[in-house]
Amino acid sequence: MQLTVENMPWKKYRRLASRPSDIGLQYNRSCPMCCDASSSALSSASPSAPVSAAPEPPPDKTLLSIDDFQFYEDLDGKNRVVHRIVACGGCGFVYTNPCYTPEGFARLFEKAGKSYGHSEGRCQEQAAWLQQHVLDIESVLDIGCGSGAFLKALPRGVQRYGIDIDSGSIDYADEENTGIHFSLGDFSSAFSPHGANHNAIPDVAVITLFHVLEHLPDPKKTLVNLRAQCRDNASLVVEVPVIDRAAAEQNKDIVGFYTIQHLSHFSKASLHAMLACSGWQVTFSEDIRDYNGYRVLAVAGGAVSETVSNPARQRDMAATHDYLAQWRNNVTQVDGTLASLYASLATETNIIIWGAGQHTEYLCHLSRIFNNTRRFIIVDSDPLKQGTAFHGIAVLAPDAIPQQLWCTGKEPIVISSFGGQPQIVQQLLQRGVAPSRIISLYTKPNVY
Ligand SMILES: [Zn+2]
Image (cartoon, rainbow, N blue to C red):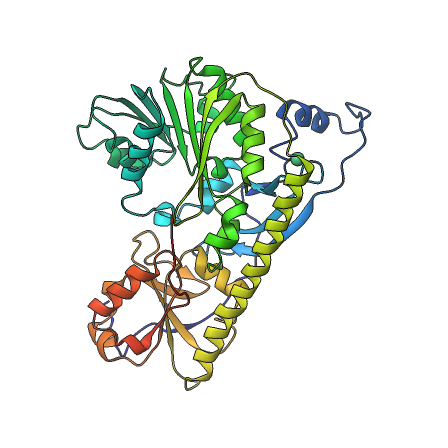
């Protein structure tokens, strides 16, 4: 049905009761840094028989917890999780617990869509950096290659391999005749010599992991497996966001450093420690300008038992508290912007929200955006989200909204996105929306 200004499906917010899913969405896990898989498997097999006489470490400390977090569209209340960030009582490593099960991950992130996008030009910078910092780049394996933009930015003479878990990205990457070997795989299990889908890594000079390690349920295992299978003088490039830079670089976004997409939340010190005990020696490291990225170059070596030193651990904890204090301030600021917007409007004025991603669920938990009797529609340019409902509110394509509503409507349009905000403002202006109706929640957002 063609929508007109008169028949727009304005709806009030209505949150369904949380219901158990037919599959296990999450599981409680041991610390990915200090508990190796073999000991946790043993202890879970025989909980009454302790495997060592070592004293129990202190319990993990909860840093942030949001209950009943919904992943995108309404699925009968069956896609809700606890989003909890903890610091290990034993070693201080910060990780998401509970963690998603593989089936849970597939279900929950089915509608995530373009959330993994990154800035244009980033791949050129990464390719130039690699050529500048690594002597031998005759062959490169990019793990988590997405649509292959980084590999395509490398010289054609380089033998290039890419692997990604997302079939859509791999299909797209493979379309052109680039001479790059793309493969589809879950790199946690694909590279495990014990995994069912054992798939040895190609013999390459360089392995790259740009913003991948923080997404993996067992990053140490992946690093150990890569070290076990790579050539002796292989180089490894890892880039992750770090808490050391979160307060400076991610001080505005209400999603921010502890996003639902990341399972480990590294510091510079914890990344170095994990690499060392996985057999990788860091030879160079640097902060990437303009966004939260910390890039290290490591070479294959022997595994050394390394833990984060006490002073480093204290610095990490201080950075964590600084960041969380800023994050809370920012939540207050965003909520204040929405509260003054609502106070300035007649009570019957409807609201358009642009953005059906995780940012809107964060707003739902942290602000008063839905805490009233107003009616809403949600707009999103991601086809995966269009036609769904989000807490009872219809999610529509921008083109489904009558042009008259964009041009002459009175409803304010709240942009619910951090990284996407500048592009959304541009799109709204192009559609003829008056600037006074566009409500931006952030000043100068920066994005990876
Ligand atoms: Zn630990």
